Length: 412
Ligand SMILES: NC(=O)C1=CN([C@@H]2O[C@H](COP(=O)(O)OP(=O)(O)OC[C@H]3O[C@@H](n4cnc5c(N)ncnc54)[C@H](OP(=O)(O)O)[C@@H]3O)[C@@H](O)[C@H]2O)C=CC1
Ligand SMILES: CC(=O)N[C@@H](CCC(=O)OP(=O)(O)O)C(=O)O
Image (tube, rainbow, N blue to C red; front, top):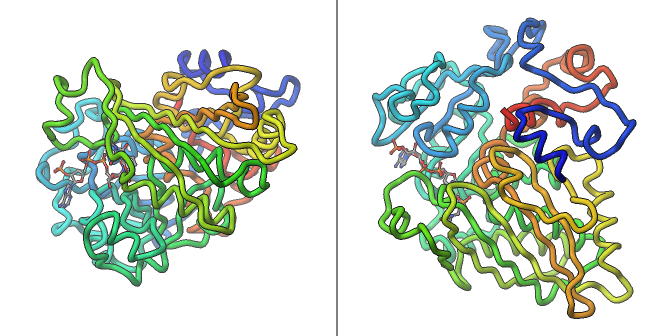
C-alpha cells in the first residue's frame, strides 16, 4: 500500500497495474497532457460542440462542488449549468473560492434553469426534493442522481425508511442502481442512474463478490461504519457544529439508519435470498473519509485466504478497487480525495470468522466520482468513432474506457 499512498501524496499517478504488478507496464492515460489534442470527432449535442455539456444541480453543495472540481478542466466536458437554492444568483467562486479560476456559469435556481444546452445532469440535491425535480426534467437528458430517491426498488420500503411517499414511482422503475464495479453493463444502457449511498458502497464492494460465490454466510453480518462530517452535507445543523463533533465519536441511526435497506437490497440480490445485517454508523471528527469494518462468518471449508484470493481476482481488472497485500491495513487518509476503495481481510481470533476493512472517500468514491465514471457517460452517448478515439489517443493497448481519467481527477 505504501507505494499507492506515496503516489497519491506526491500527486503522481500510476495505474493499479503499475503499482501492483511489476513488469506489466501499461501506458497511462494523461488527459492533462492530451488536453492539447483536439477532441477530434467526438460530437455531442447535435454536433454543436465536441464536449459533453453537463448540468450540476446542487452545485453549491459538497458533492456538487467535487464534480465541478473534477470536471472543470476536462477536455471532453463542459459545465453549462449549475444550480443552487439559497445561493442562487451567486458566482461559484463566492461559494467555493478554490473554483475561482474557472470559467463557469453563475448559480441559478432550478426553476430558472435552461436545459437546452445540457446533455447530462448530475443531481446533487437532498432526497425528497430530488424526485420531483427529476420528474420535471426534459426526457432527453441522461441523469445521475446522487440522492437516495431512486435507489430502493421497493417503493413501500422507501416510504417506510424515508418516512414520505414516493412521488415519481414510474421513474423509480426505470432507475438503475449504479454501483459501477457490480452493474457496469446495466448502467451503460440506463437513462437514470441512482448513485449508491456512501456507506452502502463501502459495504457492498467487499461483500457482494463473497456472497455471490458462497464464501461467507449470509447470517450474522455485523457492519461498523464511520464517516467524516461532510457526509451530512454543507447545510448548517446544530449536531454538525465543530463543538458537537470534535474530540469524540458519535454513533447514530442505531438499528434504523436509512442505508440499511439499501445494503440489504444489494446483498440479498447477490445471495438470491433475504439478507439482514446489523449496521451502526458513527460520525468521526474528520471532514471526509469513511471506513466500514465488517465481521462475517466464513462458509464451511473456506479460509480467510480464500476470501482474499477471491476478492483479488474479482477486482483484478478494476482500477478503483484495491485489495491490500498481506496484513496491510486500509486507512481513510490513503483514499482522501481519490476514487479508490481499499480493502483487506483479516482472520478473526474466533475460528470461522473474518474481519473485512474497507475505506473510501465519502465525497469521491462514495458520491461524486463514482458517478463520473467516463465509461458510463460515453457509452450512453456512444459516438460512432469513440473506440477509435479511445484507442488512438488514450489506450494504445486497446483498453476499455473505464480505466481512463477518473484516477487522474482524483489524484490531483
Ligand atoms: N455528502 C456525502 O458524502 C454524500 C452525499 N450524497 C447525497 O448527495 C446529495 C447532495 O449531498 P451534499 O452535496 O452533501 O449536500 P449539500 O447539503 O452539501 O448540498 C445540497 C445542494 O442542494 C441544494 N438544495 C438544497 N435544497 C434545495 C431545494 N429545495 N431545491 C433546490 N436545490 C436545493 C443546495 O443549495 P444551497 O446550498 O444554495 O441552498 C446545495 O447546492 C444528497 O442527496 C446526499 O444525501 C450521496 C453520497 C455521499
Ligand atoms: C455523516 C452523515 O450524516 N452521513 C449521511 C449519509 C451520507 C449520505 O450522503 O447518504 P446518501 O448517500 O444516502 O444521501 C447520513 O447518515 O444520513
